[in-house]
Image (cartoon, rainbow, N blue to C red):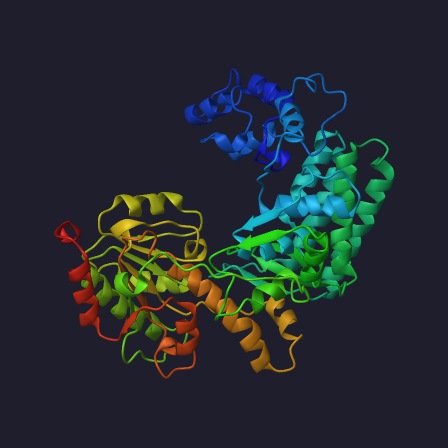
Amino acid sequence: MIRKGKERFVCDARLSQRLAAVQEKQKNAGQRKALFSLRTYYDLDAVTGLSGFDRRQVCVPKVCPKECLLRSSCRYHQYLKEARSAEIFVQICNHNYLLADAAHRLQEMRPLLNDYRALVIDEAHKLPDAARQMYGQSLSAEDFSELCTLLEKEKYILAAQRLKEKFTALMGAMYRGELLEEAQRTAFVLTADREAALRDCLSLLRQTQKQLAPHLPRWITYRLGTTEQALNLFYTCDMRYILYIQYSRDGSPSLCAASREMPEQLRRALWLKGIPAILTSGTLMAGGSFDRTRQLMGLSANKRLDDFIAVSPFNYRENCLLYIPDGLPRTQMGSEKEAKCLAEQICRLVEATHGHTLVLFTSYSLMGAVYNQVKDRLSFPLMEVWRHSQEVIHQFKQAQNAVLFAAGSCWEGVDFPGDMVSSLIIVRLPFPVPDPLSEAEREQYPTLQDYIRAVIIPDMQVKLRQGFGRAIRTETDTCVVSILDHRAAPEKRYHRAVLETLPPLRITRKIEDVEAFIRAKKSPDYFMP
């Protein structure tokens, strides 16, 4: 039985209201069809083409009204009844749902999942990120707007307007007012104008709760309370949290608070219960050790812990070639010279492998700079994928010999089997970018070198392994993997760390070996235009 949050299911009462509202209105044909198909499907994830607005209008609300006339026949409640049956032996959920269930149990609330006697966590390397989200807090302009909209729907227009004014002033005190090349995290500093804006918001939130709590639905009152609690963390500079501002590329801020006790919270939530657990992933190990994973997961003190490394079925030594160019120059990161040097290397490799290339960047700004250098020089289709550009990825897969520039999420979770990626180019070693979270972790180590060895290098190795995984996806795939970072070269500082990360495979520094490998491994059809 698949278990997931209620916001992923249809509320039949809200669906009925939405269908009536659009019955006589002009609406995109595809979106209308998707909306009306929900009379058959109650799982929102099973329907494609549904608009985000429609999805929000018809999903199950945070709290179902007890007086709802459809409660007894509601498909969502029937699903819950079936999910709680004693006949269900296997439950499948994502990491967030698992942690939410654990939080309910710790607070002696009704569990979300049935009691279980064994736990298997797949893609376990993503569990710490889910824990940071679960045990942290964040507030954006969209969150504030949604809260005000909820009050407006309850006919408290004046209260909503007053809160909106205070929230706008608070966001204004954080706003950068400039376009950024990359999304950024910066440490939160309580300046005088931010302190005043926070004080005004907190005062009005408390006043609003006191006046309206007897008249509002419970879950809206709860939402007002959690917003107040989150803002108070920043007003008091609560030391239990790492406080920072997340800026999007347009400069819009979000207030974020990350718990400093995340590993211990994971330990209490999942590992102290004595339930047997299996954590599995292709990237739990870094540099031949699970130490970094144990630390992040809250497992460092666990004495009943075994690890196992499964041998890959892929013959990397035969089917993969690692290319680290000879004489890579040491250039200033982000400079025009770096972009030109990388463009030259990429063009040579693309011609050597006849396209079929995925180029992974560690930053969107560098990707854009190199793209501008090569866009008129390649004889193969060139594509650039930005955030959430699934359409571009689909076009690349349909092309015969294209070149795809990518960053961000394309380092993992994207599958390119067969010849479509026969050349994987990793532009830079993917070291984590310094931010308030990493600075807080650095403080836990006596020296910078200790921190680099224990955190920076293992985190780079995990990311590198994820990127390398785009190269060989089946037992018959063949691929050249190129690393264009001078620090990865023999005799350089991180060469050993790179070799520890990758499986045993042949290494070359000559572009001629790349050409020979492709000619030897590919059929004549591969070279056709």
